[in-house]
Amino acid sequence: MSRVGKKPIEVPSGVTVTVKEGEIEVKGPKGTLTTPIPDGVEFKLEDGQLTAERKSDEYSAMHGLARALANNAVVGVTEGFSRQMDVVGVGYKAEVQGKKLVFALGYSHPVEYVLPDGIDASAERIPAKSSINQYQTTLTLSGIDKQLLGQVAAELARLRKPDAYKGKGIRYADRYYRLKQGKTAA
Image (cartoon, rainbow, N blue to C red; front, side, top):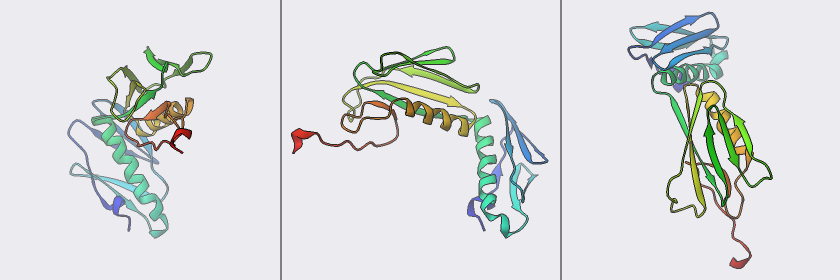
């Protein structure tokens, strides 16, 4: 039995959940999300709690997944999600221009990234963090769709991967990056 799948989802006041054939629609103060329901899993809404039930043990792999997707939709429309990324390196910059991010990443041209609908970004320059020597800018991405937010963050991280020696590039703010030592250490 899936431990995640057995947990009920508390539906807060102000959020309406509609269970349809093959999908769940969640409306809240921040917007509306639809989540697909895999085959073999059913959702029931009783007394402000949403529960996932599977038809047989054959669908045990989808049980926890379906519940997690529904929970992410409920959390997304009530609180939202955010992800922070650091742009590190001398001369590396990031600025927000409407629905577009413009980066200077050491290439011969500026790199532009158009944000999809539902994702907002803000860039702020904070004094140097103790663990990063050449710290420049922190990007804060926010939105109600956790999956889309993660995809955008991954695409931004691929624009300039962190260097192995100095750590220059676009990095996730909450991750630890182990740097190699240069020749002088030998």
